[in-house]
Image (tube, rainbow, N blue to C red; front, side, top):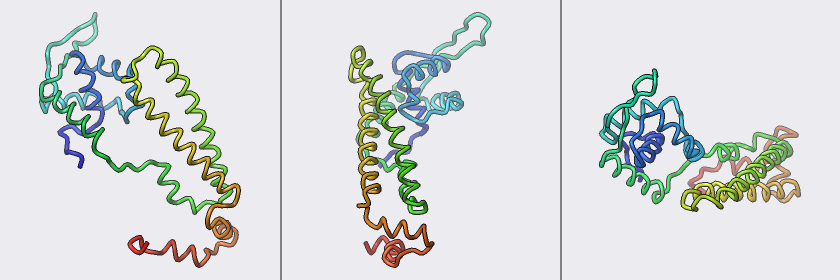
Length: 215
């Protein structure tokens, strides 16, 4: 089970990972995380960075270590990670890697109610999705091939994961499209008839109304 964190925003995890390398002021944290493309790894709302930093300091996961000033710019507070912060960073990483957590992708939500659309429309939408997926796979694959020649695999492992997930989804969507276009998808004729007549077949109605505990 996931632990209750003092600062649960994943941006806090990213900040801890940044200041674990060296002391930084918030502007440097943001620049470092952008340089690491952290927005690809987790949902980041940059506008909440200063709030996250303040909360990390409040809970003594980071601490002020001085300030810097460049030219006429305002003075910037520099923070360093505390021992408690290092422990939090390590423990949180262990949890994310080792404890499964149920997430709810938007695509899954769409699949769960796709019966409200005509099968032919679903086919068109999935074809569009597949084209986008194939494009992302191509672009990310090319980038990964370039990066792997210069960057240790340890720091590209999340890109490997992204590619694996994209390829798995593309393969699944391609197979589903095959069933829909070839007419082998179970209940396809009843599904199509419902959108033509507005009447759902008895067997589909019974299945739709059947309580999940009876399956």
